[in-house]
Length: 136
Image 1 (cartoon, rainbow, N blue to C red):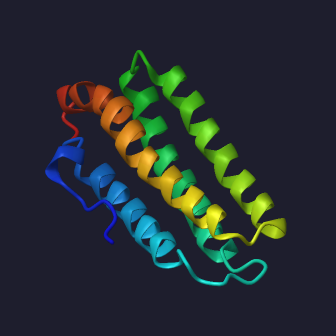
Image 2: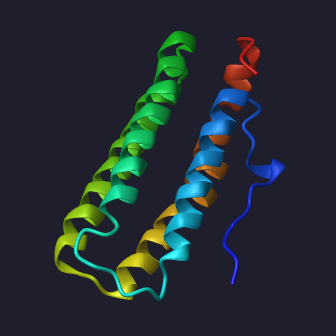
């Protein structure tokens, strides 16, 4: 079984952000590799910690440009970022008590949905604004 791979269709035509999106794919692959494994308490925590650290860095990058370019959908997009952060924290909390394979599948689904929904629908919306301001 194989998970989602990077495709030019995911590109927002901004090198810095595309590289950050590619890093999210590495987290997805890492979570996918844990499916079917017998997890120990806290075993996913390092992955979730790195995921949260990267999410914060990535969202700060986007939000910096939202403010700089006065992106009209910036406030809504920031709300989506907060929802993603909350979901990562919830995964970490649930992992303390739930070691089932379902949690790993849920994490994979969450990361795939983030890529397919958030990047493809929401991040694509700022591409034109960012490019119009010379950001590639």
